[in-house]
Image (cartoon, rainbow, N blue to C red; front, side):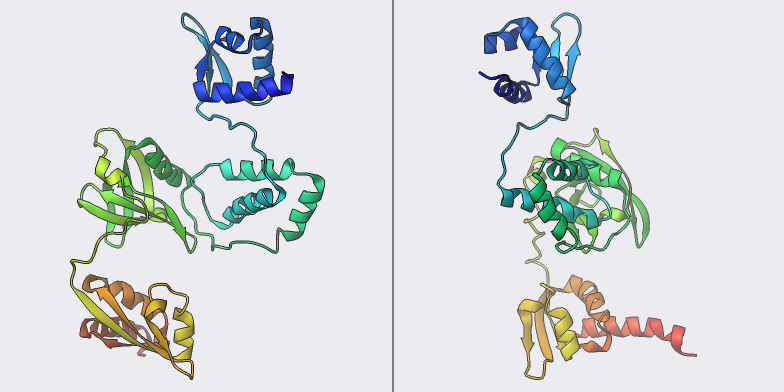
Length: 314
């Protein structure tokens, strides 16, 4: 076996074992302990995170951050992965630490010169853009680790009503419009709540609160069941501009009807408790969207108008 092949096999083996002795590797490869020791030294110089354990029962261990064995990519796969990582730079913060930047650098640095040249011509022409929102990378990383390590997190959260301390079991993380959102089971409220990550002021593991296996089975695809709640039909008439604005919104587009002149209307079944949420979405369109019912929605929009009048009625 060539030395390069042996080193690759050795990386794969120590990744799987995490702890090992020189004797174990020597027996596995049929080589002397001196040769294996030189190989381990060479792997260490190449960046494999191996450290020695002294004393009885000692040997070698692999640091927490394991390295994956070499993986072959086609040109198309390499370009796709490069731009997947490249697109993350437009988010204000990431829960991966420096992992994304490091992976992007490795992909680019080790590509053949002609592929790097092709990527350079596309860098500023292909992107998945998101507005940058300031938020704590440390908080995002703690939320991500809590999923991986199956631990409860105590957060200090800033909401409209002020600051509060919550114990949460994180279900997932997702980004939308530059913001990171964290659906989680709140131990204080005994229900699933959605937290905006930039409003989490601090986060730390809480070993005293037991992890709930039933909640751990949930994913981002498991939305809270609101079928038992009282529902109403939200009726909205739209100008051509309003219809154009809402046609890309998945909450509205399935229920929209467009007319020949470009205007439209929408009749949307929603939980009654979500009237303020939908009212705020439509409020941003101003006169381009007129709420025609139910009465509670009309009252909500009217209250927002009345709250604004004193600032302009002079």
